[in-house]
Every structure is written in C-alpha cells, then in structure tokens.
Image (cartoon, rainbow, N blue to C red; front, side, top):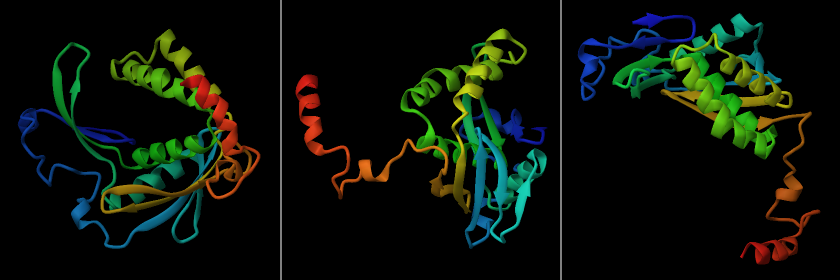
Length: 217
C-alpha cells in the first residue's frame, strides 16, 4: 500500500493474479459501495480558472480553501464508496502490472471539472487537451518525469486553457457512482440554448446547412 492525501494504491501479493477479486477488507479509504448510504448526497462545486474554489454541501455549508475543500470532497466520496479503480497498466520498463486504487475526492473533482469544460471550453482547445495535453501529461507523471522541461511546457498549456473554465457544477454521489446534475457559467457564453435549440428558429437556421452539406458531400 502507498497512501497519501489524494489516494491509496494496492499492488503485489494476491493482486498479481489479475483474475483475483480484491478482498473487501483491502480497501481502506472508501466504504464498500454496497454498504454505502441508501440516500444520494448532492453538493455543488464552484470553479475559477479551472480550479475548485468552493464546495457547497447538502446542508448548505460552504467550504473554501484548497486543503479544506479537498478534504471535504474526500469525506463525501469516501462515505459513498466513490473512486475505486482496478486496472492492469503498462509500466515504463515494458511490463504489465495490476494495481488497485482509491482516489475518492479527486475522482469527483476531475469529473466535475470535465463536465464544466464541456460547457465553457472552446472546441479546438478541448480537442488539443484530449489528444495531446492530457495523454502526454499523464505519461510524463506516470513515468516519474515531473522535474522535466516537457512537464513545464505542457503544464503551461494547461494553465492557459483554463482561463475561461469558470462556473459551477451540481453533483450527486450514490452507491459508488458520481453523476452531474447540471452545470452553469455566468461569464462564459459559448453555449447558446437558442441557437442550439431543435424547437425554435434562432439566428442559426436549418437552411444555413444546405451549402455546407453540399460542399462536404
């Protein structure tokens, strides 16, 4: 086991057989989803420039501060069994390895962030993130190359992409699952309900697509 604030990882022993189910008493950070509360828990996350800056609990309590917010997210996820992963991964040295991970709060924060980015992030910036930035940043960190110029370069790209990731995400956890109930932003207006509507004719009319379709064909 290797535990820190973000997660706990489990490897070796019986886990080296990828067909062995992890024993229930192995997991130490999260409740067994089958034994999690029978009532869902809702909360809201607020982001500024891609960073979570506020968490509003189901009781209406507001949590701010990086550490305090992260610990609260951990607490919510842990009691609902959110954040367990069992994977076979590819090591830097060329071998496959089976590992089990618990990453409760960070799993929720990441999924909420992705949901908000879908609303406010430019299409091409998002494509570059998914095709280049995310994959390479993860690879660099996984291979232990945090202190490298390529990590600095990609991280600068991440910061630049997050300038407009502002808004809030309404979330729900239940029996090991995390779901987004809604997302909104008061400052970023890339999404226009009227233009995207299938029920009304706005500034963008269906007839406008005729020429485009002909050219593409």
